[in-house]
Image (cartoon, rainbow, N blue to C red):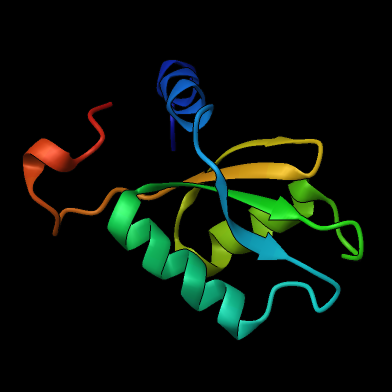
Length: 98
Protein backbone atom coordinates (compact mmCIF):
# COMPACT_ATOMS: atom_id res chain seq x y z
CA UNK A 1 0.00 0.00 0.00
CA UNK A 2 1.33 3.39 -0.99
CA UNK A 3 1.35 6.34 1.39
CA UNK A 4 0.01 9.69 0.24
CA UNK A 5 3.56 11.08 -0.01
CA UNK A 6 4.67 8.15 -2.18
CA UNK A 7 1.57 8.49 -4.32
CA UNK A 8 2.26 12.23 -4.78
CA UNK A 9 5.83 11.52 -5.88
CA UNK A 10 4.67 8.89 -8.38
CA UNK A 11 2.02 11.25 -9.77
CA UNK A 12 4.75 13.83 -10.39
CA UNK A 13 6.95 11.28 -12.13
CA UNK A 14 4.04 10.04 -14.26
CA UNK A 15 3.13 13.54 -15.39
CA UNK A 16 5.58 13.45 -18.31
CA UNK A 17 4.85 9.85 -19.35
CA UNK A 18 2.95 8.92 -22.48
CA UNK A 19 0.29 6.19 -22.26
CA UNK A 20 1.73 2.76 -23.12
CA UNK A 21 -1.34 0.63 -22.37
CA UNK A 22 -4.56 1.27 -24.28
CA UNK A 23 -7.88 -0.27 -23.30
CA UNK A 24 -10.46 -0.41 -26.08
CA UNK A 25 -13.87 -1.90 -26.71
CA UNK A 26 -12.72 -5.42 -25.80
CA UNK A 27 -11.81 -4.26 -22.29
CA UNK A 28 -8.98 -5.86 -20.34
CA UNK A 29 -7.88 -8.87 -22.35
CA UNK A 30 -5.00 -11.27 -21.74
CA UNK A 31 -2.95 -9.29 -24.26
CA UNK A 32 -3.51 -6.04 -22.36
CA UNK A 33 -2.55 -7.72 -19.08
CA UNK A 34 0.62 -9.20 -20.59
CA UNK A 35 1.60 -5.83 -22.10
CA UNK A 36 1.01 -4.06 -18.78
CA UNK A 37 3.12 -6.68 -16.93
CA UNK A 38 5.96 -6.32 -19.44
CA UNK A 39 5.90 -2.53 -19.22
CA UNK A 40 5.77 -2.59 -15.41
CA UNK A 41 8.71 -4.98 -15.33
CA UNK A 42 10.75 -2.67 -17.55
CA UNK A 43 9.71 0.73 -16.16
CA UNK A 44 7.97 0.21 -12.78
CA UNK A 45 5.65 3.17 -13.49
CA UNK A 46 3.30 3.24 -16.47
CA UNK A 47 0.47 5.35 -17.77
CA UNK A 48 -2.53 3.94 -19.59
CA UNK A 49 -5.52 5.25 -21.44
CA UNK A 50 -9.11 4.03 -21.71
CA UNK A 51 -10.40 4.75 -25.21
CA UNK A 52 -13.88 6.19 -25.80
CA UNK A 53 -15.09 2.89 -27.23
CA UNK A 54 -14.35 1.03 -23.99
CA UNK A 55 -17.22 0.01 -21.77
CA UNK A 56 -15.38 0.89 -18.55
CA UNK A 57 -14.04 3.97 -16.78
CA UNK A 58 -10.40 4.63 -16.02
CA UNK A 59 -11.06 3.88 -12.33
CA UNK A 60 -12.49 0.48 -13.15
CA UNK A 61 -9.62 -0.19 -15.55
CA UNK A 62 -6.88 0.74 -13.10
CA UNK A 63 -8.43 -1.40 -10.36
CA UNK A 64 -8.83 -4.40 -12.64
CA UNK A 65 -5.29 -4.12 -14.04
CA UNK A 66 -3.87 -3.66 -10.55
CA UNK A 67 -5.53 -6.87 -9.40
CA UNK A 68 -4.36 -8.82 -12.46
CA UNK A 69 -0.74 -7.59 -12.38
CA UNK A 70 -0.19 -7.18 -8.64
CA UNK A 71 0.55 -3.48 -9.14
CA UNK A 72 -0.55 -0.48 -7.09
CA UNK A 73 -3.06 1.95 -8.60
CA UNK A 74 -1.62 5.45 -8.34
CA UNK A 75 -4.10 7.68 -10.12
CA UNK A 76 -7.13 7.70 -12.42
CA UNK A 77 -8.15 11.00 -13.99
CA UNK A 78 -10.40 11.36 -17.00
CA UNK A 79 -9.50 8.63 -19.45
CA UNK A 80 -5.95 8.13 -18.12
CA UNK A 81 -4.57 6.07 -15.28
CA UNK A 82 -1.21 5.32 -13.65
CA UNK A 83 0.10 2.03 -12.21
CA UNK A 84 3.23 1.30 -10.15
CA UNK A 85 4.92 -1.98 -9.36
CA UNK A 86 8.37 -2.23 -7.83
CA UNK A 87 10.74 -4.50 -9.72
CA UNK A 88 13.60 -5.82 -7.61
CA UNK A 89 15.24 -7.48 -10.63
CA UNK A 90 16.40 -4.24 -12.25
CA UNK A 91 19.59 -2.54 -10.96
CA UNK A 92 19.09 -0.45 -7.84
CA UNK A 93 20.22 2.81 -9.48
CA UNK A 94 17.46 2.50 -12.09
CA UNK A 95 14.63 1.83 -9.64
CA UNK A 96 12.19 4.47 -8.54
CA UNK A 97 13.13 5.47 -5.01
CA UNK A 98 10.13 6.11 -2.79
